[in-house]
Image 1 (tube, rainbow over the protein chains, first blue to last red):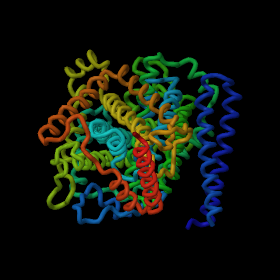
Image 2: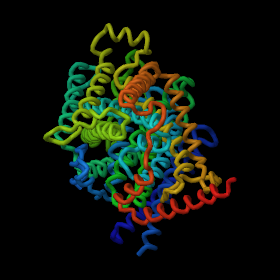
Image 3: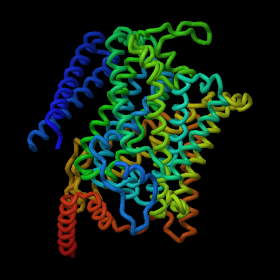
Image 4: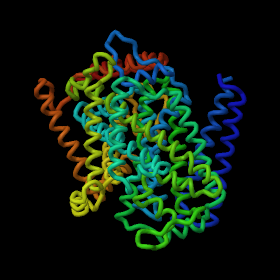
Length: 66
Length: 552
């Protein structure tokens, strides 16, 4: 069984990934506008948000299992 | 954990116990990470050298295809938790011939894996020990890479393999290190305007972009490790999807982050002038022949402040990770050859084990021998001016790490293409096997009275990987010749072997997949899945009996 501290650390990292992803998306759009240069940055942001979301889902699943 | 890892390619007679399933979720993640995570250390410089200002787009295209491949491997490894990986999935889904071709392509990749990562390992070390530099001292570099391969082969024959605890430690250190490089790089040196400017002014030709995309896929190779971990993980059906999706996203994030950082970073130190005395950008410097084998270390050393520390440890950490990856090539090739021999796709000599160490000595020696031949072909132009002239005339001067990258891209694209087809086929022919994870976006259909789901993402991934295979064939002179030749010669050998053994040459042998699946799930400890499988099989048999009876 994982410890509560470990689960909270995962939750914190999930929130960090989502925030980072969102800030990358916003900054990329502000700097590059809608151009091909925006796409890699936006996909990077989406991947970060997805990883955060995945960790968040994992956290809630482990909470529900307790 | 050591019980798993020291087993290595050691083989078991029927009465011997199987591999102990004791890999933890973190162990499973780090197993994959130590294999796939090392790829960016090799891929970054190669892609920057080819795709220039569109390197991030090249990584993006290859990365999206890789996500599809990763999802396919996750589904298949959770449903069939056996170590054969792509070769086993194709063998099971498409039969003997395609099982052989996919396995043979995977074997090409593993032999390249051995050389490419050993080569790059020495490139990284050369940043600390300049005498190992490939461009300055090609003979020293060649001899050291050769000795590394011979050393790894010897260790694998003796049966020593790095412990999983060591893998976990190195992977953990690398995740922290790469995150730190990216964090400080983006914080202190990244300029979004410079990224946009580089993309606009240094956009490559379509040919170079295709070249870059085909090289970018090598940053995502090594998913076989997911299925190898599945074989040795307790309750793989629930653990593997969790760990492999984290792995897929982590690798994608690193690849996209590095490529964007390299294009938009202001270096801490002045970049030396190029060979013609012109000023060069950081991305150009990372992609040149001197640095493309150790691009991550050079980039890290150019991160303000943190670079002073990174210059000391990143080459060493990178070299260790690359050495682990090279070793996984030796281990993986011997295991796949052993498995293919067991299913009579390769001659039984590949199952011969060392009388004392009980390791597949013939498989290890054969595929390390192929690796050494590839090393010679890759290094020859630098060792002999006459050969350099021939390569320059016929192969656009592709040599060294570029030569190896070409073949690696071919082998990966070829074997992954078959995996997508096998996934679709298995959805239709083996709908009874429970799948704890499925690729998203499926279209429900009826097939022979059974409800099946058609995987749309597998089709998208297949189109993506076939286009990368086509890019490889168009842009790589060596990959175009040597890759298909490897497959063709292997296939001829397969036909000769099957004919001599009196086995069907173009058809498959009879396989009892039901019994096999029950054994697989039982050994994995997935007893609920096994019960579900038995119920599904019973229902399917009943439906088919009804259908048969209703026919006139």
